[in-house]
Amino acid sequence: MTEQTLDSATATTPSGFLRVIDLRGQHLSWNELRHAVPRQTASSVAEAEASVRSIIENVQTNGAAAIREYAQKFDGVDQGRIKVDPAEIQKAVAELDPAVRKGLETAIDRTRRFAKAQRPADVEVEIAPGAVLNHRWTPVKRAGLYIPGGLAVYPSSVIMNVVPAQAAGVESVVLCTPPQKDFGGLPHPVILAAAGLLEVDEVWAIGGAQSLAAMAYGLTDGEDELEPVNTVTGPGNIFVAMAKRQLRSIVGVDAEAGTTEIAIIADNSADARFVAADLISQAEHDPDAGSVLITDSAEFAQQVEAELATQVAEAKHQERIGIALRGPQSGVVLTDNLERSIEVADAYAAEHLEIHTENAREVAGRVRNAGAIFIGSYSPVPLGDYAAGSNHVLPTGGTAVFNSGLHAASFMKAVQVIEYSRDALAELEDDIVALATSEDLPAHGRAVTIRSEASGREG
Ligand SMILES: NC(=O)c1ccc[n+]([C@@H]2O[C@H](COP(=O)([O-])OP(=O)(O)OC[C@H]3O[C@@H](n4cnc5c(N)ncnc54)[C@H](O)[C@@H]3O)[C@@H](O)[C@H]2O)c1
Ligand SMILES: N[C@H](CO)Cc1c[nH]c[nH+]1
Ligand SMILES: [Zn+2]
Image (cartoon, rainbow, N blue to C red):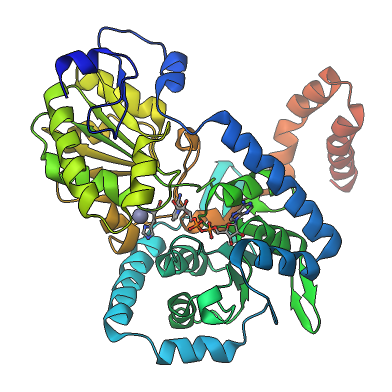
């Protein structure tokens, strides 16, 4: 890649992977930056939104028949019973490869310790004598957890969903995950085994948007009953993310944890081999995955391109990796300096942001928007995907500007509890009456004065 190629605002680099978005010498506003960063095209999002709308309506109207229709259409499965027999879960645990079991148990242990520490604490404040306020966290009663299983299968996502739900104290959880053609229409056995290790016994073999509709509205299939849930969580492809967007008024949802993204801020102190490997690691998920390099060094971008050419050629899933890297959602953003790189990263608001610069920890402290930040050369995203202890269900598509990754509080809500004594209420009487009068809601004031009058009579 030459300096000349990089001068063109949206040129593709010679090896044909990342297109170049050259912002050097430009001073873009926040809004202009939000439009300049690589993103999935609006038309593909709109298409998915429309097809998800009809899937949700079909499940609402036709229940289990619609679920079987989509199992056939999307998963190639002629589905018998949709609910998984708990004996299948126990069988999967018994037959689990010991090395995989060890990996799952390590991940469960670290994720659980961090999830418990992340639980929000209740707060009590005596705001005035006899006037006590509580901010009390309570878990939702029942949660529906989506575990993806299309191009890849995600036993690690069982851990990332179930562990924070359990840490929050959720009483009842149900897992939904696509039926697998190669396993007789059952979910993947390692997904079932992970559920078993976490003592989850309600699993339904339903994929995609239709599973979120089933969990939100409930589903009856013969004797089997999927009770509606209070909240749905979990990662998935664009159809899963759009279903969450559309069901938001029916059930609680965590962040839109859609198609994977990685952004990397790097300067010329970074190791191009590591940066290329990490960009490829997330492109491996999905042809729609986004891999974005943000750097103030055109020379370093060139080194990464050379590494991509070598490493993609060696990758098992090189076809979908190549599509993802070349897509509109991926690219190299060239900036004037580190300050501008941080601004670009904030505007992109990546699901995962890696920082490969001098003083990486200090740089991380200046970033506002990201689902998770991975600091330095030895904290690659796959560490967080599996076993760091942090959660891998993270906001995508720029929603990290206002959303967080999954954690215990995603399954909780806070109740504000108010307890005033007679005297504490009397002290506020004039203020409340004045405010109620100003809003022309005199009955509000009366609910207070009636008490002080009664107190006066009672002495
Ligand atoms: N953001 C996160 O936290 C996070 C974490 C893990 C994985 N992911 C992402 O999850 C996704 C997993 O995707 P996947 O496809 O492998 O599994 P998936 O389970 O999300 O999707 C498979 C399901 O998609 C549905 N589907 C397929 N084609 C469809 C169509 N044309 N119309 C409507 N529905 C259709 C089917 O029901 C199928 O069962 C990847 O994009 C990955 O990047 C994100
Ligand atoms: N990178 C994904 C989150 O976007 C999580 C994952 C699970 N397995 C592998 N990766
Ligand atoms: Zn991953």
